Image 1 (cartoon, rainbow, N blue to C red):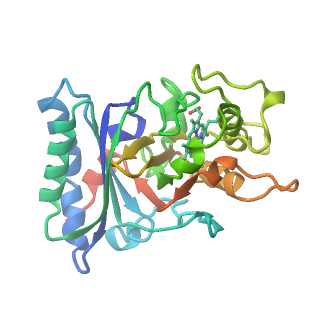
Image 2: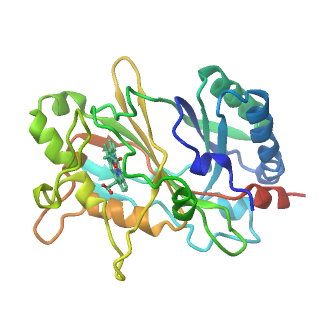
Image 3: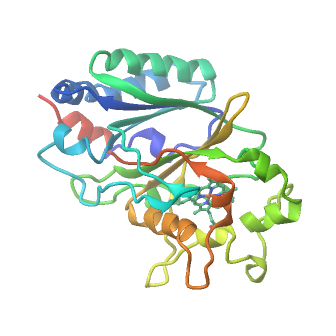
Length: 303
Ligand code: HEM
């Protein structure tokens, strides 16, 4: 099974994200076009071999049954929306998600144009965002993001379904976060560091005893009932305009359960009333659940 390269890709300099809905009655055309996607990813990677291009297409949980009525990934469900009011992680479903990444902005842009041409007349573009590496892989809040991500072969173990008809695929969750920068920038350095449970300049993890129950890294380091770590592979990148900035958060995992538990732990109050204080300084504007099938699976579908 060949997984789409974008699932386990190493960090890049640039990304372009596209979110589409399929126009009514165009499902079978889209299904046939998606068969051409693995060849498109290969063509781009080969033509611009110095750009570390990787592509990824993922299908939304609502769109799945109309596109592929014969077979559905066992755990593909709605986005696990959380919270309310100022501190909420809503569900905003999309039918298709494309992650186009490269170390060259022009190559990512060429990929965007190829995808737009492939699906012209069949889809409506609902959202797009450009991601970029900020300093030494920092989030716009100034902290290094991705340090505790699985490395090497562990990336595939964490991110890819291992067996069955959907082997080599991945459950993908995407949220567009919009940071409350003015509020964040008013915080003292130590308060910011307590919110992550890591130091800012040199990115050192706090000792376990020093990590507040409200720290982001404490609330997202979870174990299952057997004591095994519930890991995800994060492929997030910052986005920004002159006036607004945030993070396109992307989780890839062999099961949607790990992301779901983490998001609950961030947003819901525990018995002591604690929740992730990072959620006070950034707002989730979108949230959608997808499945990214293997290249072989995409090729086996269609007329
Ligand atoms: C860790 C940023 C949302 C899961 C971290 C770290 C940063 C960070 C700076 C510490 C360094 C690292 O290990 O990467 C952010 C920002 C977010 C966000 C800015 C939103 C705006 C989320 C969400 C989840 C998540 C929604 C999952 C539901 C994790 C995990 C870790 C982590 C699993 C590693 C924890 C550990 O083992 O220490 N994040 N994150 N993050 N984050 Fe987030």
